[in-house]
Length: 135
Image 1 (cartoon, rainbow, N blue to C red):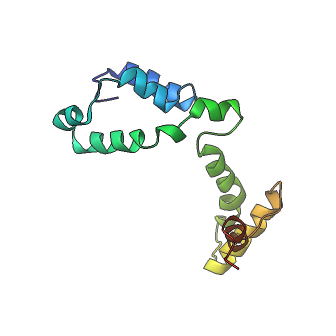
Image 2 (cartoon, helix red, strand yellow):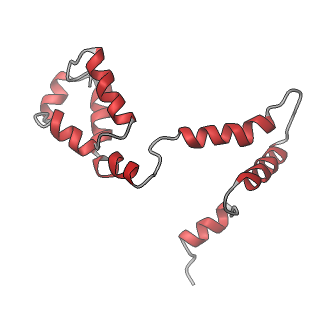
């Protein structure tokens, strides 16, 4: 957005549209950056802008936020972070508490299982279900 030399209000408006899942990245790029060519960008943009452009451009097919929102999927990590803070953080970070790594891991698993809608499975079991070992 800085490359487009927009003022702060315009950038804020577009950023908010992304946050509210009103924008699919490919559509936004097609509407606002159709004229951007890699050689032109490399002549006028700094390294950070080039890296951001490449990062986004390589992921356009998976950044379909309006589609995710229509299906009821969260598009940000806020829900996961808030749940982690509520379920794990409040219990493990009480005043005067000290935890060994294994004790904290066990308490986190216990708290997560207590508050989970479905039973938890270990990472090893999940990995083997996703990628079964050859027979």
